Length: 203
Image (tube, rainbow, N blue to C red; front, side):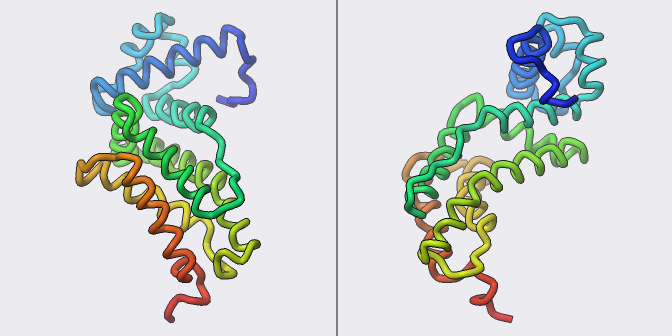
């Protein structure tokens, strides 16, 4: 399905929004392994044939849900300061993962990606888009000489969110603002030290 073909405010957009909301609710409540297109259609109050025709499979529905999540994610910050930009990124991730519904939804989607190649591909695309959106804050820091030349901007952005996802999926520790700030500061410190600059890495 081509997202660009959806007419904003039209019936197609309303149906898509209702189905994706229902799919998210079902994922949160029952997990990927119990996600059922007929149940999603019932929740969304649309015909089953509409859901089967437009999304086809559970994996296709999850893929479009991730597309929708990327479309509605907050834009990146541009403060003119590396640490403030990274802190803004970390706080955005923190608020998302700490939210009861959004956190549960991300857990379910990650489980889906572990079980299904199509869902995994959709999840990889989702994060590629998000990382690419935030990478310029690191590239601009290189241009301002805040970071060594050649610093891998995508690696720095990944380093910001990784500790927060560890808390979500592994440790169960609180995903709070303090944890977000520490993640941003650790990533910024490592970047300044040249950890993400190829020329500074040992052979």
